[in-house]
Length: 150
Image 1 (cartoon, helix red, strand yellow):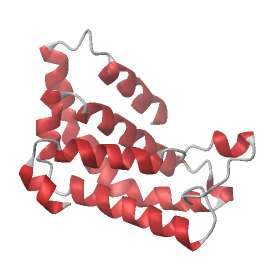
Image 2 (cartoon, helix red, strand yellow; image 1 turned 30 degrees about the vertical axis):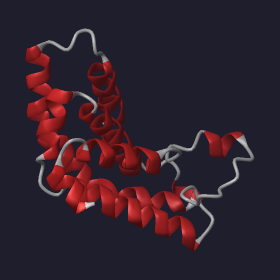
Image 3 (tube, helix red, strand yellow; image 1 turned 90 degrees about the horizontal axis):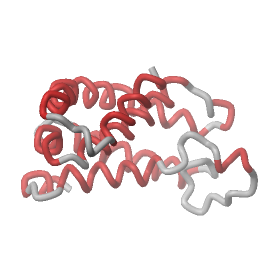
């Protein structure tokens, strides 16, 4: 699943060959991807324990977020994703929960987390909160209704 999402990420990122047929395909799959992210976003919180750094559900959720961020960077897909019920709320709630998890104990979500070794630098959750913020910002871009929710 992670590999498939990485392939989708690469395809969505290709700006030059975004044919209208391809855009339509991604828009049709956007609801499915957003729904999967909404279902699985809690799995990322398991990454607060060092032993769970390779949790597959959490890795899938991280890749789903990456794909959604890229999709919301494309105007044609952005408008569709801005209208997905609950996606913005889920992203905000997940950001709030990861922020609280980082405050409770020192873990990958801690704001002052010191990157001392290669292990922490390559942790799959590095940048997760910044990607959540990117998704929230993209979903609010030129959308008064979503801006009012934040």
